[in-house]
Length: 423
Picture 1 (spheres, rainbow, N blue to C red):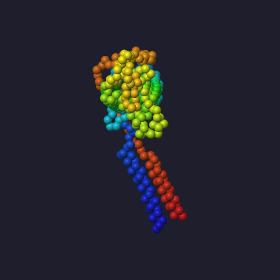
Picture 2 (picture 1 turned 90 degrees about the vertical axis):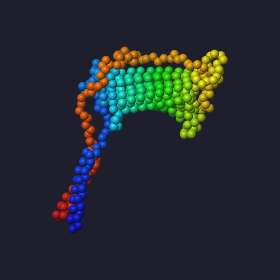
Picture 3 (picture 1 turned 90 degrees about the horizontal axis):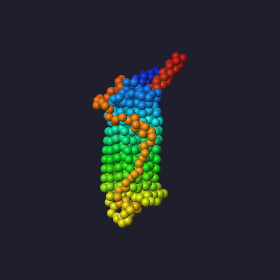
Picture 4 (picture 1 turned 135 degrees about the horizontal axis):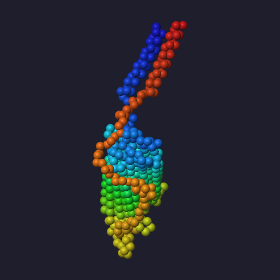
């Protein structure tokens, strides 16, 4: 009787395992775990080919030019040393239903130029990751979560773009030698963000009506000059950044002109015009560090930022001092607060004659540029025909394998038991 009961138990276990496999299979089909949603891709392959071949992109040597608008596709560049010319056509994405996609995607590329696109409604308008010598010029980049994202790249040149209504206009992370030159960056959550990067240049940009105009976070040895920061919440925010030069900028009509936060020291400000900001400077650097990071503050008792060079300070619209010798430098210091003083305040805005010469490679590219607006007024995209993307339903391989193994073990045990019983 005991042997019969044991046999029945083993047989029941075998049947349950088989049922488990069937249920797991049905469950996997009924409740798939899809990959992160993305858009279909148009590829510029490493051999120069365009895939699909029906994509509205015309190749002429190493110049790839759009011939019509494109909707709901990512252009994925897999070839070096090319120019990708949007010719004023639109590349429009889709951020509904959790779609995370880039308009133009570059990864591990060298010497790629992106020019004259209208890029709208992507998570990343242009994603430039692990690249070198990328040039991004004269694009219109609007209504994206991030307009231009530069990550882990070297020597990126961003010139003459119109960037508006993005979460962050230009994001630079761990990417040295980036040049952000003469762009219009307006009405974004953050205009320009430079994080953990060094030796970058921010020159000649119009940065207005953003949350933060410029954020230097963990950045060092950067030069910020000849820009206009106006009507932002913070014109310039400096956080955990050191040894940056910020000079000859117009910082006007912001809620706070310059906002300093923790760990920022040895930054120098001179030749700037602080015009009618609600608060010219808010320095939370040492006070914040002292309260939140007392060990750091104790190790840097003389940590400070500087508000003048050896001869030139800044112009402050609320400076009330005199200039008896008419040398355009005030006779009395401009006291910002107990931690900061401009010892050479200017009595009129500085006139900057400092320029940034365009490099030869950029001049050569600009000579190829045609009108940013295509001759056609058709806004309907000529999308490359392709079948609807099929999402492969993931199957719980590990669980099924375990179930099969359990069936095998139970079956072997039952066979062994029955053979032994016959003897």
